Image 1 (cartoon, rainbow, N blue to C red):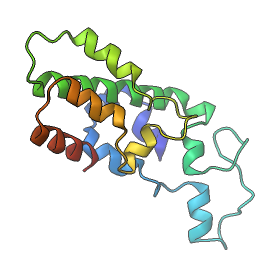
Image 2: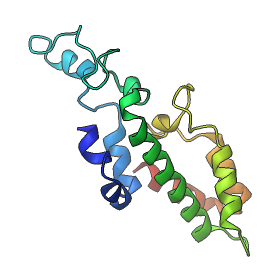
Image 3: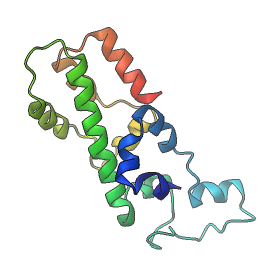
Image 4: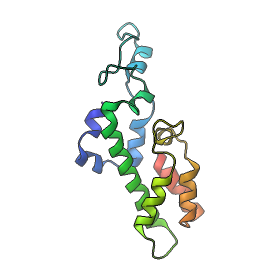
Length: 153
């Protein structure tokens, strides 16, 4: 399921982030979720079919070494999406896109080994770094709320 949506970089570029987050919610058919739904069909001792090391849980998807390039592509696309949102909605003149990119990279949501990461955004939690980023580029409150809402819905 995860692979068919994310391996192809052309497909990845065409995906809208607002619809992508619906796919990223913890409702993915991981083995962990399938065991909960149909314990008579799925064995709780089965491991991730990609790495065969750990249980395939939602959090494992973000850490599995076999999916690393997929989520690195997702991070890159989301960073580009944030940059575009800021460029289009900022009330500032003469914004340097490279400066925006540097500030986006400083946000603390890109490391999936941290408690709060991009997967939390998919669940509806917006990190203060993103809110502060929008504020620093003088995105109006009404636009900031709309943009944050669009990212999640």
